[in-house]
Image (cartoon, rainbow over all chains, first blue to last red):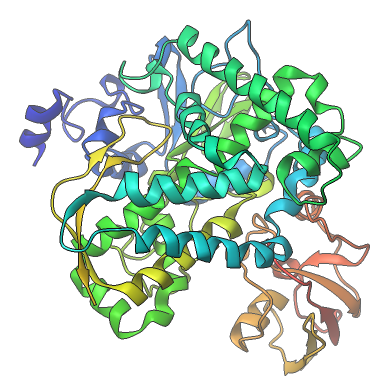
Length: 420
Length: 104
């Protein structure tokens, strides 16, 4: 298999090349889905690993074991989320500010302001609407013809949900997907395939302009709604966020990406994993009450965000290594979720595994994914409605995966539906 | 053996004999008490085993990790705790914990 990898992408053999010669964050391993052996090696040989020359020429540390990531996330005072939660540093002339990349107390204030939008009480109200939209989307799909699941289902459903969460004009909702994709496609993280800094900036400013208009439109219409914008307006601590363009822009990027890529790619991943593991699909057909458990397993197995970054606020010792102040610490959730010391048979996709909720796809600690309940609900409703309609979703070709070390996902997945 | 009483949000009560040394979260899991999710399995890093302690003997105070997680709860009260951090013991005695409307 390693020979084949070399032929495909020209990457060094992850098992025989000296570790210091490997770029752990090389996005092509995600594009070709050849990342697991490298991270298994890291967990075994170098769980706290320093790399001198990473994306954009920056150095960083890779943390690959489950328990180590949990310990680091607990200590947010030493391992800060400022100034950035991705390997790359913020661009000096456009330091956007988002609460995922801040520490308490600012983090807690801004997070608490928007949390009610995705709290389970609000979700009960959303569920009927989400189900209706899911039914519409699924009912429009052709039976027995090849089509792209990513485009017709995953993108369609997550975009509709995002428009609802922001109370964004429904007919213009495709813009949300465009902005989300732009926010995560920095060319330095995508092996050159993404956008340049200037191109991204133009798109992000367009997003800011539209959302500034939306803020003012929402402000005065007197509508009672639990959408994210009105929640920010209602909380005294964030009521003037629009006056701080970089803060507003940052939090929009966070909420749009957080509600988009993650769910979208788990919607696609589930279809793919069930095709690869027909025995698991048989289990699901025999007992559809496994859907909730399967949803957690899909989210673990996909790990739509492979990493988050922290930055040390002081010199520190960790697992016997000296880590200087201002070091970039990359927490590889994608690796932790395959750590068999914590998750038995972690490389296998098992929809009814014990302790299925114990995974790190949502991260942990104070930055743990705020929308996790919404994401799980969207996926649960999707699979409930799929099982009512189709006997099988057959994957008829290899997926086209994203070449990105921050978003692990799919551009395309050709499928064919079989009627009940 | 100390007795732990769980009161669900809708008022349903579950009274169980708890083994010393277990956490209140583990007791809830063992007896299938609904309303506690415990996504992180007991490390105090997910906040999904939140409860309100109505009565108990002596309990250890929340450590900084638990404190930061409780700080994110929109429904936090002065008796909020993460049940994974509450240990059943002779000194903690019989406990009554109320469960929140939702975990997140």
